[in-house]
Every structure is written in C-alpha cells, then in structure tokens.
Image 1: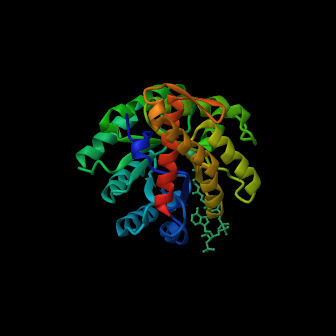
Image 2 (image 1 turned 90 degrees about the vertical axis):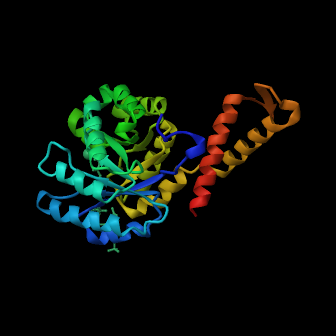
Image 3 (image 1 turned 60 degrees about the vertical axis):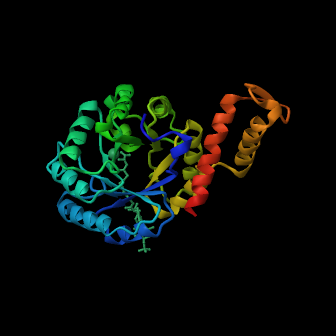
Length: 299
Ligand SMILES: CC(C)(COP(=O)(O)OP(=O)(O)OC[C@H]1O[C@@H](n2cnc3c(N)ncnc32)[C@H](O)[C@@H]1OP(=O)(O)O)[C@@H](O)C(=O)NCCC(=O)NCCSC(=O)C[C@H](O)C(=O)O
Ligand SMILES: [Mg+2]
C-alpha cells in the first residue's frame, strides 16, 4: 500500500490548484494561496512555443522553496512528446513533492518513470501522481492502481482528467456528470484497494460558483480526497466542501470515546444515541478525526 489512505499518515489534499508554468503572475501566488497543493503545469496550459521557458521558470520557482505546508507538484508533458523526457529530468532536479504524469494508461509508463527517477537518484520523497484521463486507463484502472504496491513506481495519487476523458470518449461534460459516474466511481474503488488518493477533475466554468459547489459535493459523495482547480476563487469553497463538517467530527469523537469506555471493552457493536455503531464505524471515525486534526494543524 502507498501512503494515500491511512489515518496515521493522512495529508489533506482538498484543494489542488493548477498554475500554468507560462504565467509568472500565477506562479508568484503559489506561496500564498490557501490551496493544499499546487500543480505547476507544463502540459495543457502551456503553448508549445512557451514550454521551454515555462520549464525553466518552474524549476527555478520550486528550487526557491517557501511553499509552507502546500504540496508542490510539477505536471510534465508526456514522455512521448518532444518535451517530456527533458521535462522529467528538469522536474526531478527540483525535487518537488510529486511529478504528475499526464495520460497514464499502463503500468509500463509508471515503471519507466520510476526507473528514470531511480537512475537520477531522486529522493523517495518525490512521489508520482498519475492523470487518469483516457478510456484505456479507465479499463485498466485496477492494474494501474496495483502498481502503487511496487515502491519503484512511487505512485500515490490519481488525478482525474475529465476534459480529456470527454474528448477521448465523446461523452458530454454536463452538470451531474451522468455519462461519467461509472468511470469516476471505478477509479475511486481501485484507488482505495491500493491506498492511492484520488483528486476529482476540474470545473471549467470558473465563474459559476454554484455549479462548482455542486460538483465539489458530488466529489465528496464519490469518496474523493479533493478536487483539482483552475482559479483561486475555487479554493475556499473547495476546502470547505472537502473538510469534514463539525457535526461529523463531533460524532466521530463520540464514537471513539464510546468504544474506549471500560463497559464497551471487547465489544464489536454498541448503541450510541439510539443508533447501532460497529467497530468499522470506529475506524471511519478515527480517519475523520485524523483528517480534521491534520486540517487544523495546517492553519
Ligand atoms: C482560466 C484562466 C485563464 C482565467 O484567467 P484570468 O481571466 O486571468 O483570471 P482572473 O482575471 O479572474 O484572475 C484573477 C487573479 O487570479 C490570478 N489567477 C488566475 N488563475 C490562476 C491560477 N490558476 N493560479 C494562480 N493565480 C491565478 C490571476 O493572475 C489574477 O491575479 P492578479 O493579477 O493578481 O489579479 C486562469 O485562471 C488559468 O489560466 N487557470 C489555469 C488553467 C490551467 O492551468 N489549465 C490546465 C489545467 S486543467 C487540465 O489540464 C485538466 C485535465 O488535464 C483534464 O484533461 O481535464
Ligand atoms: Mg488532461
């Protein structure tokens, strides 16, 4: 298992903001915005002519540090593009928290990157995140998720690329995402088996905050860990949506306390406020409390 899921090592990844590597003004904000993580992008947000300059700017930005508790991730171009191999080398030299690989659809791609990072002697603290955004990735998601068991791959997070999924499948991107529901929940299921975190795709209509909030709520219902974002105005509502509500945290603390009572020692099921509570609920409660504590520790 990778570190993605356990209550002991929980890391909030509620809000994860893309910033185009070609936009110096946006990159400047990476150290101050209240996002849990930032993705400095070399792929889709950067025009071909601007890729090399953006790469240099991103490496310089990451090496300069000063991001506080934010995770810093570099999204490179695919290794099958003219920029990918140099992007990987440059990103590795900056030792970000993670390198995000676009259009991952085979275990082989992850192993190739893992070998390269090993050859470059990149510390194990630099993880690999994988974009899941092609039909083939959806069909092979179990095998791809299982690659997290091989430490060579460093795989720890899936990022859904719903724009590319829409492009590749011709499914419509509509409010409620009915055409994609099966794919999204399949990715969550595979990720959970192998301890990989899952981040939802972006909401393109960034001026429609009500629509955005509805999609955040849907991501929470799917069991996702957070959502990828394209605009700073999306950060606060996203943080709220993916933080456990106060009442849920209070209930979780009550469940943990109830199981700790001497009269409940050794019991697998108890009654709390008229409701059945089993040990599995206590486990869920521990995760909720750990996430709430980790969020509180950030602020
Ligand atoms: C969508 C945008 C092009 C809108 O830009 P703009 O019109 O300039 O926005 P604003 O005028 O409202 O900006 C206000 C201030 O906020 C800063 N800003 C804007 N966006 C960001 C950002 N992402 N990170 C940091 N700061 C940002 C502006 O600089 C303004 O600052 P100031 O000058 O001080 O007022 C733009 O938001 C944007 O480019 N967003 C990111 C787009 C992106 O990265 N796309 C690629 C990732 S999504 C993807 O690839 C999905 C996936 O692969 C899939 O397949 O689905
Ligand atoms: Mg994409």
